[in-house]
Image 1 (spheres, rainbow, N blue to C red):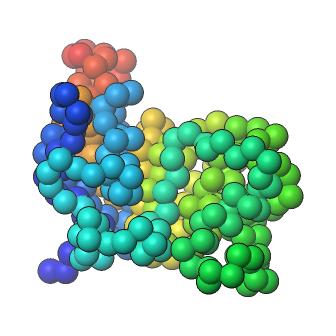
Image 2 (cartoon, rainbow, N blue to C red):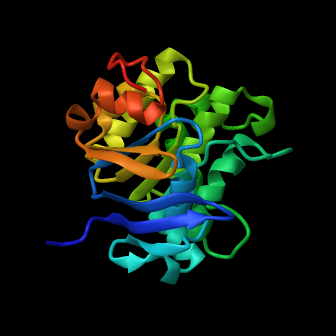
Length: 247
């Protein structure tokens, strides 16, 4: 059986104390893996490891069969689109310049964008409902609008793997629903998506597999209908709010 498009196995990571222990995640083209857990459970750290922003203490991440540690930064940027949780400081940059950063690994070293690249930027913004933001200053638009722009940057190069940290954060309900449709379209087009989210309904709608994390360890993994029970969610989040009566 061929390996999934994205696979991480036996990941361990931490500084003075472990933040992640023996974590395995995988997603093939057209599949979505949702990472669920309370704040501090390790979701963002795991995405940073998958994106190559951090290096694991042990274990490995492979994309299309290649160990991520052996892939140079430019090639990695062609393979992976990463939406971080926080927007970067981009003082003085127009929205189109922020999105264009997602194409830098594909651009010749000429110092300026061609019409083809400009069209890709416009298409990515249109796809996330942000075409009207094209020439606005990035640091003068709302948090929700910045979220759209950052997603456009993640998808503009059409990478096969998308790593999304809270993709619906700061979005109004209407656009959150529109974005769910956009993510479904990306999956239908063959992208592999791993997303960290607090939106359980989004996980139920889009995810083929859910990985539940608590204190850096996997509580359970499997199809949403199989693992998102009240008892498992209560244990994962350390609450009794989901109705199991346990914490």
